[in-house]
Length: 104
Image (cartoon, rainbow, N blue to C red; front, side, top):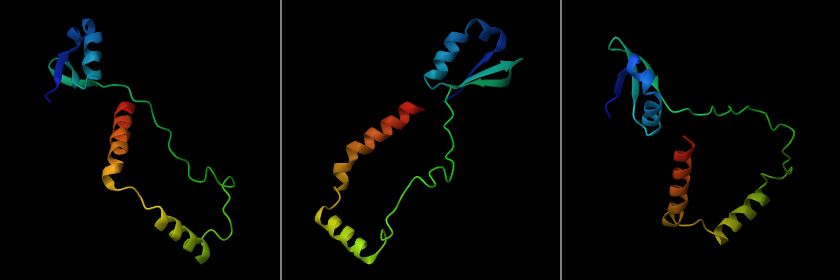
């Protein structure tokens, strides 16, 4: 999609329209004397970075969580209740994709 380039002088009187264009997904470039100097983009809130070790001491695991007996029980449980076929998972994937799109 070609960028919408507008000179600073014109942009002063059309700022609201330019912001709306950026929110619609159009690329808006501000220019000074015909040379690009800035871009108007939609605001995206910063996502806090994950801090490794933040849950240290808050999660408890049984001492036998990885024992052969526990693994056998999990395997039996999974065999008794198999995962849904891929076509049954598709509506969830579309829902997740739509949620990701709305967050941007």
